[in-house]
Image (tube, rainbow, N blue to C red; front, top):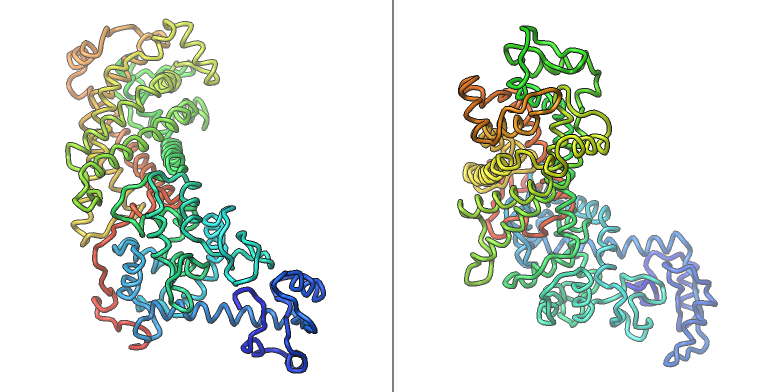
Length: 600
């Protein structure tokens, strides 16, 4: 039946009277499979061509299209019903959270609240928090294509045993061209992990992977290979993002051999870099007008003139009192048009993509290394970073990303200030190189910038991780979703900004002095800090703080939100994104509701 060849006695069910009469009249009978378009004679010729099958006087019956569809639909329904019965251990007709948790435990998958919540949301369970067979059937049908694709990734081009004895040619497909009839043995699974780029996998790990899924098919007996039906039951308990992103083999390995540390698949680093770059460019572009307003306000200490808060035609702001962000944006919009609000944003985008990509990738790489270094006696990595580990990871990530991308930051600042560089990025860079001292001009003020970014990154990532820990403690261990993580990241950025704002002001003034008829007033960062306090007071070190707050919270909130959302959808981290062992309760029962549709 799995081949689509209806020759068994049960195949008579659902056939027309004519087909039944032909089957009774001619013995033996071979029926052309409904999953192939081969004509009956061609099918019989293929069957007779087998050296060990010399059939004489065989009748061939070709099913009518609707009868073939009926048989396939009945087979699919029976397979899904059997899989659902495995989850519905007490036969009540629904699967609630404890039952789902028990199934996850048997497969070695995470059982934390975040993982179970994601699965329940995907199954679109009812108001009682239970999954009915109709929900399970709809969900399994919707992800059949992704499951088939993951199965093909496991099979690859490796040879394995065909599912039907005496039928097939020893490759990953049978005569019908259907890879669902194939089986994956230890060698096939081991090759699949190698193709995925996972290091440190041996034959013992592959044997554990096969043993985890084998025996979960129709007859329940263990064997030396995994069938598609067994793989599909496992895949039905994976989140959509993990299955869609090609992590099925990696997750399978992590579930079968959690005590060993293996490498990550080849594409994980690229996905993490992409998520970081995408988050950076979306967050920066969303607040580009506020960023320009902040840069202009911080530059007020270098440009002083008559008491009028306007931006004139030459682009120079004359003021005795720093304007607020809204006033600067209105003046820029009136004199330069909408494009003026995004002046310098192209350079910011060019800078923020590699900077954020490097920053997130380096931080999470160091985070993983620290957690693995503090593994327990069973080899399981620690769950949370220590305070000094958070600070070190954030500081190194900030230092390396700043050193790599600082020239673009300098170019952006000189294009954003009033009277600054104009034209394209290449034109502005050429002008900066020619007029301000060559290559050294791109690294003006790197000392305070490096110090500012190291402190800011260390504080920002530390506060981000700390706020997540506090959130989980306040919510019974539940991890925040991407939107909540974005809000926590924005809050941490505001606290970090308050502490690093004086360095930000010094950095901006060091970069733009000597530009647009500005005087060169400072020899180094310490002198800039001292003279700024003497001439303008201590509050000058926090110039533009209001605009910075208005800008930094949405920017970092959007950045963290997009990064976490993109990482989740791309499957970054695999099963490591989820809590593995926290017990799950039945929320419906806890809230005083009936525990399922039967009680209702």
